[in-house]
Image: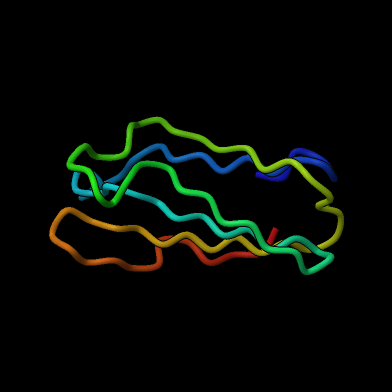
Length: 86
């Protein structure tokens, strides 16, 4: 969710099969082309990502911004769970 030109809030509210989700690696590319990557949880641990969870990115986010989230699961797999523009 874009909360203005200076913040983007990424929220996780759970879903089917998400009890095996250990980490969400969130990459946000702002309109000036700068990328930041931050995780929620840890793929090296055994505790699933807490529900609900959120992460706020603060910076210059006017224009179109790209959010890409990779989920890492307890069975060793990973997959894209979100690929969208805001």
